[in-house]
Image (cartoon, rainbow, N blue to C red):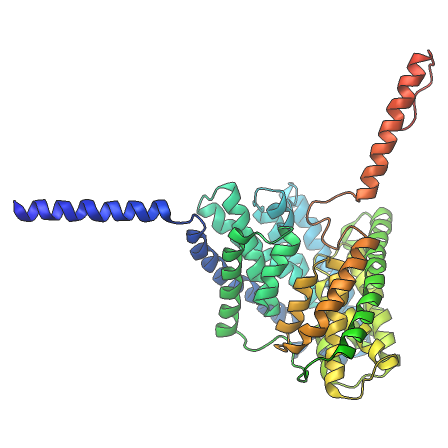
Length: 474
């Protein structure tokens, strides 16, 4: 009897302690474990996409990088493969949409920012397959955007299986996006800032812990199982001096002016092209024809720009070659985006920014030392990225993580801040505005409101005067 009463008291005390722990436990603590699971699975999803791309590329080349593959092909194959891949991807998207007969659903950013965190499976799988075929054929679009979307889809499925409520479902998808970013770019801190600055619209301290855990686990999984080291190899950059900050600020100013022009070009060409050509496979095929033709001039047109950036960091480039690749890639990525080829423009933007930074260093700065080449390439990359995303902290930290070169941050941070401020003043909508569900420009909304108000005033006046004509536009 004494033993049974003692065991009863011990069980009661242990239950009381457990209850106190549950009451005192922060609700975000279990999300850290969920974030770790999401990070691991998201890294597998990203690597699965990458290996699938290499498998498709093995059908026509033995190289892993698209620019090297283009260089090794005869000119006629270099011109033929992009339109063939684009048409196949377009047919997959078109047939999938007709078969599914349901809306594509929100982008992962919109699902986190203003939605319920639910990403439909079938439309996203069709989009992922279409993008996989297109980017494997050298189309000038970023594959990382699709990788992140795919990772977010997988994390959304995990949330649905766990029957998470709406708030936690959104957070789980945000964790998947951060882990996908970290796995694609080997940049877990930048992936966390990507979610904080762009998707969440600010630093949410309670939620960001789970996002950071997910990003770190995603990168650790990628490094442990698939690849190690930074994304790019670059010469070591020595400590930055005040004169370097001045040069970086000037480069940030230039990127801040060019970033809004780049976004305007993307939006204008997309509206014009999609209004004239309704059938998606034809629109994507024409973009592929243009990209194939441009690649006959320079093979660096192929792909998202990874190989171009790596070459900018370590190889010697003449100013003429830099200018040619910049213009050709600008036309190519504009055509791919305008045609609606699924993918992102983050890595293509990095490539354009790197070329811009190296051109400026050749013309205005002192490019003699090897570290100067790497420094100004990275400053240009971060500056143009900040000007288009309006996320200076993410852009600057990313330049450090993709090379593991800490001194780069000292010059990149002021340049990114300047570029972001100027870019946001000249164009309020960032490159991710539509993906975030932000459909209208602030000035456009103001114009519509003014027109509506003037229309109502005109209608009231006309009605008071007994007029029969309709009032102004509403």
